[in-house]
Image: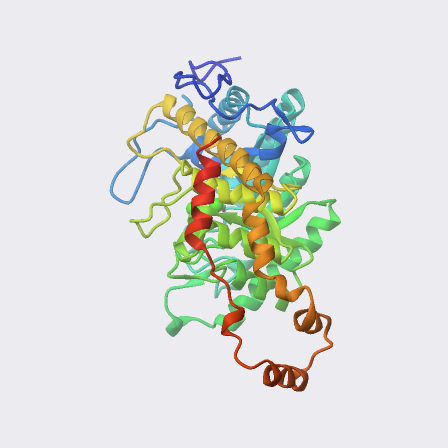
Length: 439
Ligand code: XLS
Ligand code: CA
Ligand code: CA
């Protein structure tokens, strides 16, 4: 078998290692709470950035060769599979995620695209059997081709809607065949540029119709995993309908889709919506729709989707804090929807950027476990809400107290400002520092 990368398997060497091609914190086989770290973190490789992204941006062409030494598209698609499986093996990554068109490009007709895609899927199935690698989730690229310029499920054209439905049907079949435990809807161009040309009500009804069809078809062919919506507030459209988790929740509940759909939360999309990553995870968790994560980070000084590899340990810690509180991953995982910077253009940079991201999450996981075991944050929060455990608070929660009863209570109590205690934000932030830096 041809080797695509001259770098060998990345070993775990521990925090004192200075070997750039070694993990310092991610030890895939370290047993924590009865299972190996690789199963806690469930890292996934993103096919689009890693196997296809060549550094092309709005201002310039690619800087990295991602042709995998094949000019023929069919041969290239197969070479991509081999290169991806080599990477997953060398980086100890167990999962991958794809868009249909990352696996196999669009050909001159839908029938031909489907036929060629099937060949790649068959090859993936064989490679999975040989290696034990798995599909985390699949999706359809319904935003790239010009036909989707006004959206897919929200297109003003019913023909375009039908085309997208056909593409999603095939992508679902591929996901099921490869044993994927998730299927993602990221609303590529499902949004608007101006309300002057947009029937928002019809567009949202149609988007829900498409998702309902996907659920019905998926379940009929044996898909038992989770459907996900991946919120994002803007880019490529000015206003994306799946703005953030709270907006998506309202949509899912309105259309009765909340039993089948969970969230795929991306760090960079959270910050584009002016939320922290943790906020989005917390909203998903407390509403029972936490599903999967697209692990990356944005840049606070840039207002767009930079999809950087995550290296901010504060962020990975608070992310894993939420993941642990949600009971860990079930069908989901940590998909690196991330790309090395355009200037980090060598094949080594693929390894170095994954190592950086995986180590940042391993550190975050350990720090989050320590934060929970330390208990100071949790007990502070519990104490802060202690008034809801007994007396009038318990009466409100149990439904015993009505407005009249509360009025009588407030009148008898008089001024209550003295019942408040400090929020202690600075102290709590320093506890986080204390836990993080005494690792
Ligand atoms: C783009 C999205 C996309 C989804 C999958 O911003 O992150 O890559 O994850 O369609
Ligand atoms: Ca994403
Ligand atoms: Ca992104």
